[in-house]
Length: 101
Image 1: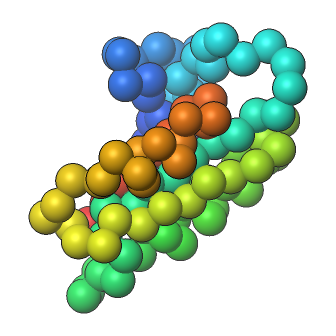
Image 2: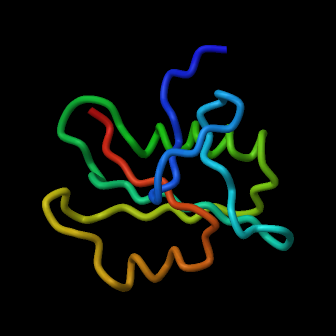
């Protein structure tokens, strides 16, 4: 299996058998919620990270017991996410943040 990209824990890279997935910590039962924070809502050109998150969501749902997804878009690439937006991810077991280039 070729790893094209890798998902990492923000506390450091944790490889599981070379699969390129971060270890899931602290989740033993109950709903598994993952989040996506998209840095650019309407890219002017190039790839669309929102679409990429939809593909990742399907992969997560296939490999993990994901029960819900929270997807948020920053209004502007150049500004940090606000406190309210960040608070919306509190229930998430993990959040993928990115920008497609």
